Length: 122
Image (cartoon, rainbow, N blue to C red; front, side, top):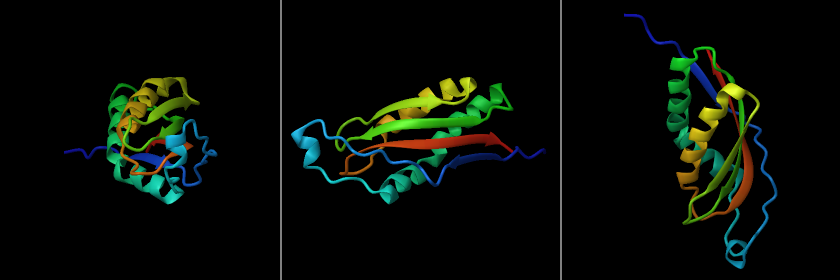
């Protein structure tokens, strides 16, 4: 039986955290998420993100590119996520990943940040 090809999904380790802007008094009372906390959440949910890309690869085996997720992590509420893709073919993947990110639990901290993802079949 032929083994399935391996795929690479890599969150760039040097992701950029944007400065946090508080839009309400409630948000200003909430602690800020650290880079380590954010990375930990993504590490725990890599399989969910990877599965979106893996499904897209079935339709387009050479699919690759970068996606930047502009995320606002909000405790006890739905996160917001807007995706910017450098690859037109990844737009559908980016939207599906944003839906996943909106439901992630970042804990009790608040932060607005950009999280880049790089996808490449091996």
